[in-house]
Length: 106
Image 1: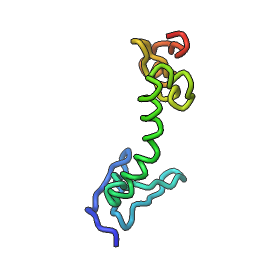
Image 2 (image 1 turned 135 degrees about the vertical axis):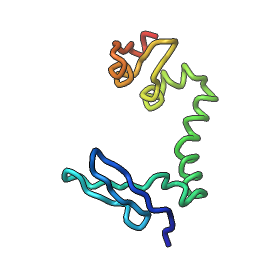
Image 3 (image 1 turned 180 degrees about the vertical axis):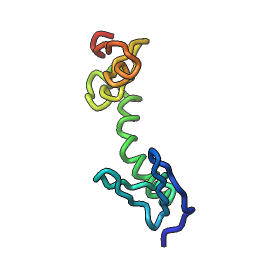
């Protein structure tokens, strides 16, 4: 059984009523799933899922150090936004209107 508090969200000028039993709505031909904080419904399971997904990265960072881990693991490198005071992530740089510095130049 799904329990929760019904809520209403505003999308532009449109108001959409959402409940855990009815969290799906369509706008502009796109189907949206509008339930916030889904992991809270299954806290133990979501904790194990998050730990299983992130622990290998944390161990790699701890064993190799941040610089070596980022240099050797492209997944970690893609997660770097700022390095040595320079913005290296292109989307972050674009959002604030500055050029990104390639990570290997930092």
